[in-house]
Length: 102
Image 1 (cartoon, helix red, strand yellow):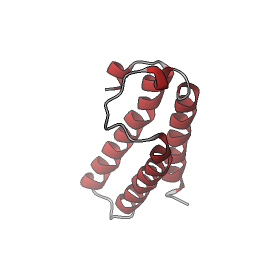
Image 2: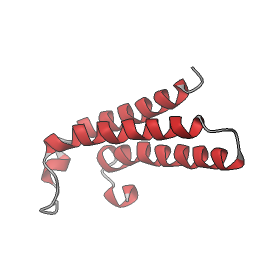
Image 3: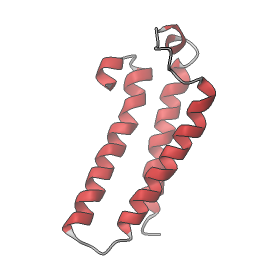
Image 4: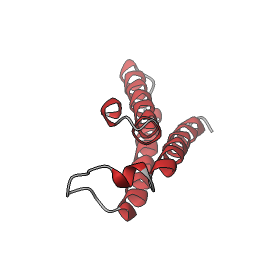
């Protein structure tokens, strides 16, 4: 139960990204120039699901460690990266600002 916030945070970030992505995927994103090595659309769902699952798993492993300044720092850095990750899709897809997302 103490680790439920981790799962909730990861699901929230994933849903925010999915919502922002869904609005632009069929219009603006299809029209922009992309490099040849851009993966096909079918790859993104499984890859991002795996990445978000691994993010939750890693935070649960850290949370399970004995309390220490290092654990606190690791969880803080994890939360920062999750926040930045959650902000990426709304910036890139929602606001159509690839430079800001970068």
